[in-house]
Image 1 (cartoon, rainbow over the protein chains, first blue to last red):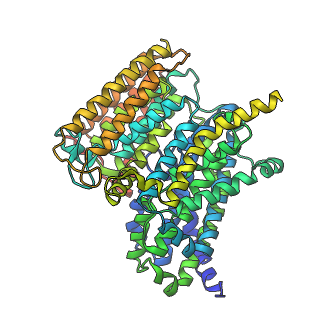
Image 2 (tube, rainbow over the protein chains, first blue to last red):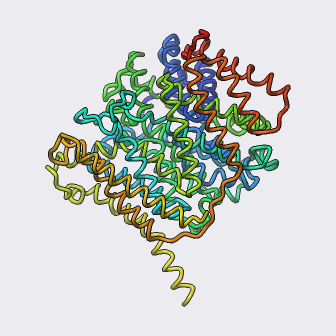
Image 3 (cartoon, rainbow over the protein chains, first blue to last red):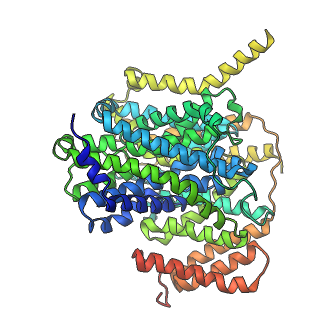
Length: 494
Length: 146
């Protein structure tokens, strides 16, 4: 058994601890601003990270990742606007809980869940990474197609509004992303000659528009002078009794998130929604989800942060990125001289272990930053609406602008803001559209690849064991609520 | 306005949209098996699903009312969104943003002139500092050069 001391000496070097703490902090801020988030934070900071020694540089980027995935939850809970797509599921129960006057409790739940998920995923990463990677490799295009459909069905079925509208929202999300150059043939779809559309609809601008801008428009309707309810703001750890009841959710969601994160190409948003849907299915009171149920917040946040460790599994062991963020991280590893792949663990074992321990440190730091730092943020939100709203809109602008530095993106953001507002009015849930936008490339790629492999036959989805397993999962998810209602009705009669 | 009526309008709109998409995909010149060769397959499949599900919406039921309050404020806000974007190209970031923040503040709440004069420049300047000077992210420049 290798000694853990060299790894500890890397992770616990004063400069690395400080760098981890600071980058988690900035990661959280990036997560808070809608449209920014871990990916852009890492991309922006990466050039600066090269002036650090290799370990410190990577640690700083990992900190941004961890903090960024968590940070989105704060805006989700306080404003009903997900700061990152990962936090879109957190809005479902986080925002209602905040509106009920329990903002602090919601933030505490989200923080503890994120930290728990992060720690569990790193522990899994430290112990079974190569094994998990091998399982992940068994997932081929048909499995991915089914997994994506599972994710979409999960949220459509979970929406408080009708499932039909949820499905419509999801399909529209999938369709929007077909605009632009087709990935296989470079054929331009639905661009109508407009050169700006050739690259497709800028997806971050769309997200910011649909969620944040539309939310601001709804704020204008409300007469309240301030955005937050006046009481219940201070984050406080949940009581022991409640913790005990939620333990199962914490653990299950973290494992689910790690597993889903370990699948290349599947990221935080899908993990959080599948976890949320599962928590709802397993709950004794599924109808309460969406009103501010602790399980909802814990399930979403534990899973999405568990992806931070999980996604590193295929990246480090097989040099396959788990999602765009890990792809950028992989680039950083390369440039610092650490080549991902099977030899990484042999040649640089202690350094990698050092990173894992540093991530554990980062998660713990995040616990304190989240619980105590968010108080500051909450104070900021006490500012009157008429000052806060322009600030939020400017933040949206920055979020949408930072990727392409293009005003076209900004135009798209406003347009989708109006669309999002109309959707809210028509009671069409927004979350499925988000997932549709995020997943569409994955769905199309896997679908077309699967059909290419099977030469056009749809039977490929039904003849592979894992794929069948996922299909069973989809049916399960769709029909379990109906079955359990029937069972309860029979029981109450008898 | 009744939700049900809106649902009717919505489902008709979506069905038409689906048909339009299918039509558009039929115009795509590349043909082939549904595998890698055919870019029309996936959007067409989705459009068909959209039509089917919208039909369900049409025949389904819903009860509530839909209310929109303060529509004048919201419309103004939206108009200003677009004017701001156009102004950015011509006049540049600093001036456009200051004016836009000020106007938005006025739409959103009561008019406290002191705040309206102080806050927009402050925020604009902070953003300018952080994004242009510290992170080197270029902001739109107009004829005024900033």
